[in-house]
Length: 243
Picture 1 (tube, helix red, strand yellow):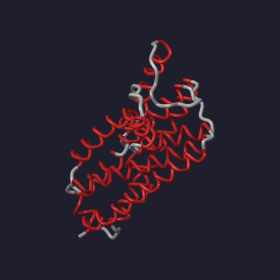
Picture 2 (cartoon, one colour):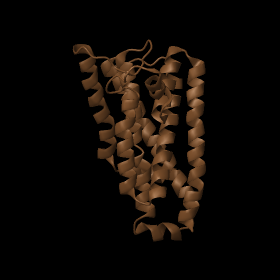
Picture 3 (spheres, rainbow, N blue to C red):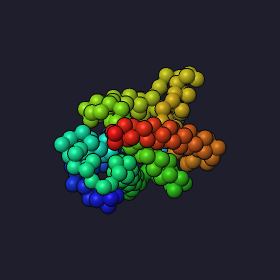
Picture 4 (cartoon, rainbow, N blue to C red):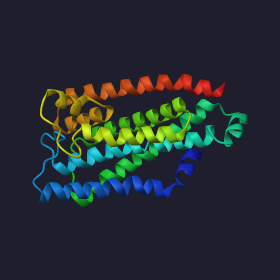
């Protein structure tokens, strides 16, 4: 089932390419600004280079838009004429949902990994403690795929889910200081570091590269807790569709 969903996802080459090339273009652009214009990133890099912080930030940002991999596929199965064929098959709907989530998670994580590889080779970004950084990015992918799926099942329409994720994906990067520095103050520091799931993933990534293991574990644990909450929310939503 997962292999079938992966093959199905591979047909959307344009969408996958956009989710790799567009963040790369933005990284190039912001890297040029930081090198040639007197501006600063607001991401609280610690000892990391601006390019490393940019890559992590844009990778996390486009994971949000990548949540469409799950909910657009699910919408095609559950809220289209294909619905009757799906429900007449011997496969339980929960297994279909889980196979789509799993395949979409793998594809989105692969996109993130390609982004890191290209940035490392072309732009010289470095990622200390890379396995742990990849772990954070994988957990972030899982959260975003679940978030998009829960949104779809709650709203019952792909347009609303797309609108919410687009607004969310536009605003949340600002809260981590990706595009510009946030105002100084304790409130904005807490917002940047812990205010959103993206903030937690960004803080965990930068923390593990800085050797701040306690902060890394705390942020990762909160992300895993949020994933558990979304997963428990998903179960009754799937049952409601099955009835």
